[in-house]
Every structure is written in structure tokens, then in C-alpha cells.
Length: 123
Image (cartoon, rainbow, N blue to C red; front, side, top):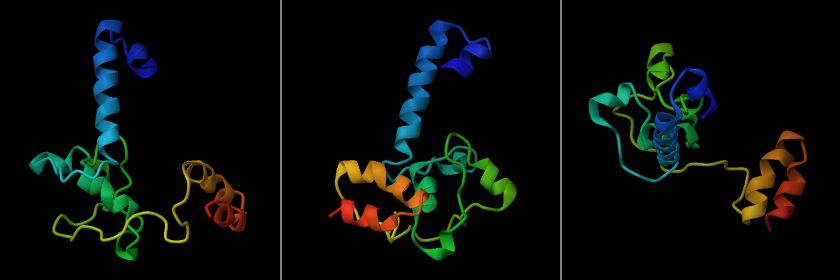
């Protein structure tokens, strides 16, 4: 909302834009088969973003764009090839799924080097 207002967008226009962008960002992590056709080289789709979370080493350091535009990955050569099969597995292999609370706290345990606590907390 604030960047829109700073750019001079009126309040009446900023609210619908903000709501649309929030919905659009939420679709990135939804398991939807959307690709946006020829616009997929410009805008991020759920399929495009799926590779970003793949556990396949061939997909590591790929599809960094995470907000609106995918063209950055095509520009810098970090986009997954369009004929690549969909990832079979996504997530972090060394972090088992746990409770809702452990899902929120585990990244901080990993960040600060206490992965053992994160694993025990998710049991």
C-alpha cells in the first residue's frame, strides 16, 4: 500500500491494486496448474514458482523471481527451461514437516545453527 501511495496512486485505486497483488502473490504457493501461456515469460505463475522450491539439484538457484515478474530470471539465465518436467518433490529435505508452530520457528533455528532443536521441536 505505501509504495503505491508514494508513487501517487490514489487511495481509491491503491486498495483494489493491493488486494489484487496480494491474491496474485498467494497463488504462487498454491498447487495450481496455471502457466499464463506466452505471458509466463513476463509474469510469475504457480508452475514457474514451483521450481523455486524444488528439491531436485537441477533446479537449485533457479526461478528467483518471487513477486510479480519472471522476466528477470529469463534475462539473467536463471529460469528453468520451459520443457523441464515438473518437480516431484518440493520443500526442505532436511526439515521434516511438523506442527504449525514448528513450521514458523524452524527457519530461525536453522538460521542460528541449532537444527537439532528444530528437529526435536517438530516431533
